[in-house]
Image 1: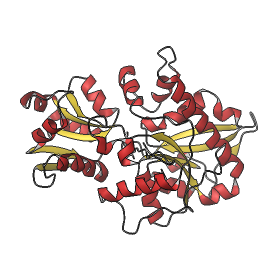
Image 2: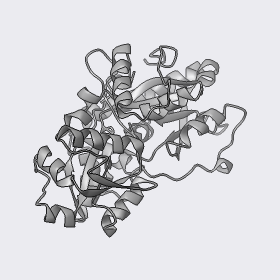
Image 3: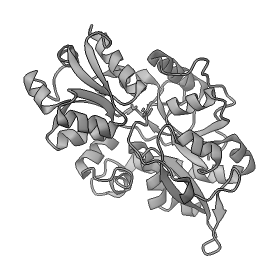
Image 4: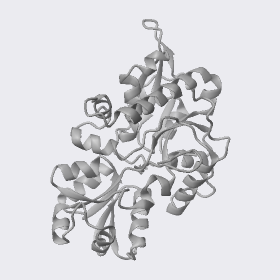
Length: 364
């Protein structure tokens, strides 16, 4: 199989759905709630063909995170148009995404494995048709005041960071990120339930506001929020997947998914194939062009979803994810991903993924 994240989740953070490696991501990010009135739906299929250009419009939902970048690159580079498609992008949350897909307000949803598996556990007939991001770009950011008081820097060893967090106040806007922080703390002997005071917040944006105001000392979420706080001079990113291998791709087995309804895939296999093909072309482009300093296509595309993030922050966030040349998945990758999700203890009881829930048949 293939965060999230929330929200990541990077994940957030890679979900390699091929033998030998899982990759991950959490789609954890603040987002605006989709207004149904803005979308035209016809039963379970609101895709339409424009008489003016002959393109089929598909509505796509994403979390407003770094993992939406392949969709924006596919649009910017004309990959959707070459497939006869026109993308309409809407920002959703982990809570509203599955329901929007179920209602037909969107035909495709850029989902974290957490959201996907949770939807399956609720009996929603969703189908993963590709993976479009491998990794979990998590950042643990502490306030400037806390960093100074505990002499923490971006290069502080993981053990030093964990020890400093004992007795601190942490912010949590996602069960997954709180659990992932717990994995890190427990490794170094810090009990996350007894040694950390938790403040529950509604979103990563609220986490950011709380750390800036001094309400909390730190929080963990997907990039680019942690790096942006650091860029603003308000905090320091003291842990990331490079420092915490338990969050990283190879250990976590987590990655972002392109998801659709089973009924939509059955009724429109040609559109699903065209969509998956365009997204795979985008991730392959990102794989080969991201490190080219003269090519700003990817950075500009990412900023369509990451409004307000500086170029340097966007580029650093993009580098924390592996962008695959193929969106294929396999059973070994799904097994690793499910083991990781189970270890977090955030999945509904009885949640599982079978070969009926994912397929590579729509990939080129």
